[in-house]
Structures are given as C-alpha cells and as structure tokens.
Length: 417
Image (tube, rainbow, N blue to C red; front, side, top):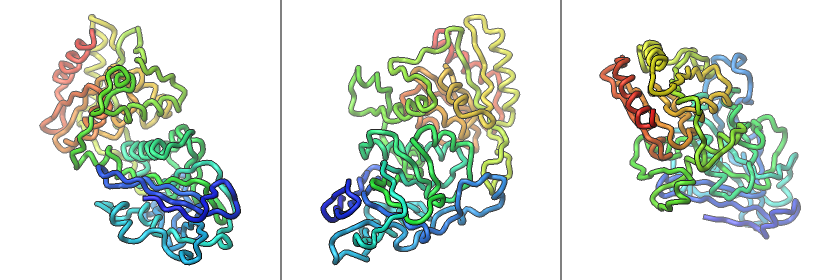
C-alpha cells in the first residue's frame, strides 16, 4: 500500500508533501513501512531516556523502557487541507498489514497508529535528518538470539527498501546500554537514542524496522516456514529459486562490519588443523531486571569441555585446536573471529549458538540439547544458511563425554581429519 501526499517534492524543505507506504509479507504477516517528510515529536512519546549505564538503572521496570505513543507522536506533511488532523492509517489497515499477532504490546503498530497528517505551516522542525534512517524498537535487547533477530530485521528492511548505503539508526525505546551496542554501531552508520534528540526531529526518509518477533528466525520456532538456504557463491553457480542466500549474506555483513574479509568462494580454515569451538554459557549481568546468573542447559559442561580438550591433545590423525568460547567476556570482534575460524561449532542449546549466522561455508554445527530445551532455533538457522547440522538429544541435562567425542570424531573424519 502506498500513499503519497502533495507533490512529493522529497528534496525540498518547503512546499511538497510527505509519502508513506508499507510492503507486506504474506508469509510473515508483517510489513516493512517507510515514508518521507516524517516528524518525530518527543514530548508525545513516553519512555525513559535510554542509553544509560546498566549499573545506574538497576531495578527499572520494562514498562518504563518501552515507548507509549500519543496521537501526533509522529506527523506526515500533507497539502490536502481536508486530510489535516486525521490519522494516517485506519484500524482496518493496521489489522490487515500491521497485525498484533501474539505480540501483546506491538510498538511499531502503535507508532503507525500515532501518525497524524499535518499541513506545511505546522510541519516545523528543530532538526532535519537527511540520510535514510531506521526506526527500531527492541524488546529482549540484552539476549543475543533476540538481538540477532533485530539485526536481521534491520538488514532486511534496508535491502527491501533498496537503500544504497548503511543507514543510520534511531532506537525508539528507553533501554540501557549493553555490550551488544558495539555490533549495532559496527553494522550501521550511526546510532542515536530517540530521547537524545531535542525538539521536533524530521526525517527525509524513515524506515520502520519490523519487530524481531516478526522475523522468520523467531516465527519459524512455532510455524512451518518452508525455506532452505545456500551460500551466495553456490547459488551463482547453481541457481535454485527454492533456496535463498539472504541469511548467508547477513552473516557476511556481520563479518565485514568487523573488518574480516568476505571470500565468497570459501574462507580458508587454518592450515595448522581444525578449530573446534566450544560455546560456553557464563554468568553475566544482562539488564536491570536480571540477577546475573544464567540457567544451566548442560549440567556437566566443564567435564565435557575438559574431555574434548584431552581427546584432541592426543588426536593423531590431524591437529585439532579446541577453543574455549567464553563469549560473555569477549569483545564482539573476537567472538566473530572465533566463529569464522571454526571448522566445528559445539555447544549446549543457548543464545551463544546464534553466532552460527556468521559461520562460513563448510562449518559444521553440533548442538547438545537437554530434554528441557528441545527447540529448533539453531537447526533452523543452519537450514536457512545451508550449514551441516547435528544434534545430541539428552535424556536430562547430563551428557556422556565419550558419546560427544564419538560424534565429534565422526564429524572431523568427514572433514578429512
């Protein structure tokens, strides 16, 4: 659906009019919306400032951090006098193209519902943002899996709307700072929390990034999305319209953002042997309502890691380097480097395994799954990237180390080791 107002003089600051459209996915039942000459009125958005240091906001409630929009929180300029003061989108339109689904508080729907049509005389701006800008609201912003769904949504929104360069970001939420902001800043050209602006801010081109809950990475957990992935180079050589390189290209974008070369033919692994990366689960303070401890998914994780390391030290067929993936206390660039250099990625079910979105071709994934956490997160990511995936399903949360080593040995043999 596209609505254009006035003469569409997008490049002029006076005269003209704004425009707005939504691109709807029938598969995901969600939309990527964008518009021009859109004004954000901060006094009509209720939320905390955002971007604070975590230790200064311990105990703050999530309701304070998520935005509440009054009517007129956002405006679009129009020339048609009869439209002024009215809503941009009807309830019928929102129900059809920006559905609530299972999301109790759909902030992007609330944002669109707040958009008011105003005349040129009322469309006054304290500041203009000239470059294309993604407006993003995050929910589970300190969890790697959910943050990757937000990164992916922002990436897809940029691709679908045909942006030629990396856009800037505005967080329309009041969450505090987290270590994952490092990657937001690496992936996009700049980052600003909405409440850090002052006055009314006007965007020449604004794109509303769908919520992470509306990406296939999340919806695929409960719905059957018939999709298979491949690496871009493979599809160039063997075109197949039943496969996609979208997730593979997203992983390349993450690697490139941290300065790693993207060899689309194949990123060579270490000549000194094969790296087996064991992704660990560690305690860390994630957000103001978090106690600092993570729930164990593998009760004897240290024993399994030590057994693999001991086995690798005496592995005669080829050199096996076991990497201790203590990601919670590593810079993101080093995390991505460890993923890129791995031949095999091993780990218990947990958010850290989401890093496989950045894995290179021929990387093999081995997930150890306790009986309590049999969920398809990482099997689906592997499927949509075109990675080889194996699972060890446990009866409880204890893994028999020889069983894990036998599986790992079999995988390494398939890699010629």
